[in-house]
Image (cartoon, rainbow, N blue to C red; front, side, top):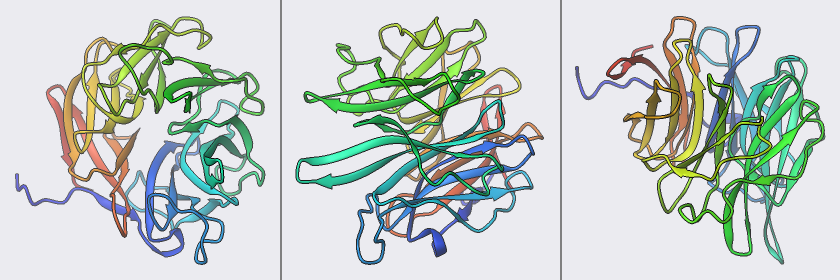
Length: 327
């Protein structure tokens, strides 16, 4: 196999979505479409300026043919601050929910708030006023509906000099949110927990995977639908921006940054992980996955740097790892 083969395609670059596109997330809708949301601005942080008077914004592209072709970018939301890191999920009532956080600089320093937006027509139109999930917290993962109407969202913040991961929850499909519950604060082995994703295990427990910039990623478990969590434990390897997907085979995919854009696979409900398998050598990453109808897997992620774009890759998960597929 030639090492020069290009397996990815760029699904959004430049144009209406701006010169810097990053932090994508994709999900399949009940109607069969796949939608991908992403951050659109002029740089890694896009504060308001003359060209972008409202700072970075959120955009969306759509595929109706299993990721082969994509629509032109649609603006999803553009508020007065730098709107960042969107993620998307469809709830059991068919509502689409897009989670993100706002970023701004004030005389008191940096401020950020986690918010959600809703769509009731498969993402063609969106609510104009976002619901605030947690003031002073950021997020980098989708809302996870663990039972009808009960939604969890991994968030993170810095308080008293410590960065820690927390869990926000809603019992009314995201309309109202309770104060986030810290899940990594005070953990002696995890000094800086942040980005956190969640998945349901076959035994009914919830698994949360937490990013660290200083040590390996950590994980914790909840046996009561997210009300309480076990102390975080070392997962065994580093990573940023964890994203969890269960395949129809039962395997769990954990995509993340480091090394480069990478993937781990668990076939025993998170007890052990096979990998890392490098998907792409770009460091931007923030990959997420969607299983396609033929059993292959769509991966969306981004390039880092000036003129960055959103990439899409198709892979097949094998017993001994992964195979990259041509489009």
